[in-house]
Image (cartoon, rainbow, N blue to C red; front, side, top):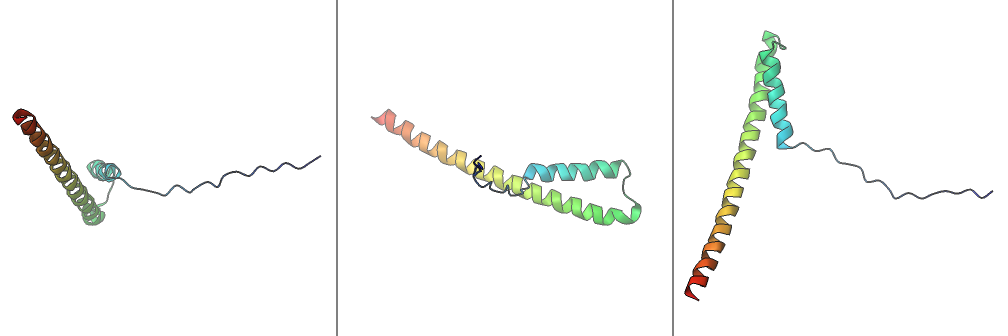
Length: 90
């Protein structure tokens, strides 16, 4: 019998990624755990520092995304206004 070997296409590895939503969830987990008393008193400052750092990063990214979306909306509005004015005069 002939030996049949299949050649499969190489599988590209999936790169790990972290999204802003993942970081929001991390912050929420830390917040919930602290409310439930999961941390000892001597751990609170380091846990709080990490939570504050995550929160600051998320706030910064979300503000940048909002500003970009607002700017994109403004650019689309400018194009629409210019087109509308051109139609009125034509």
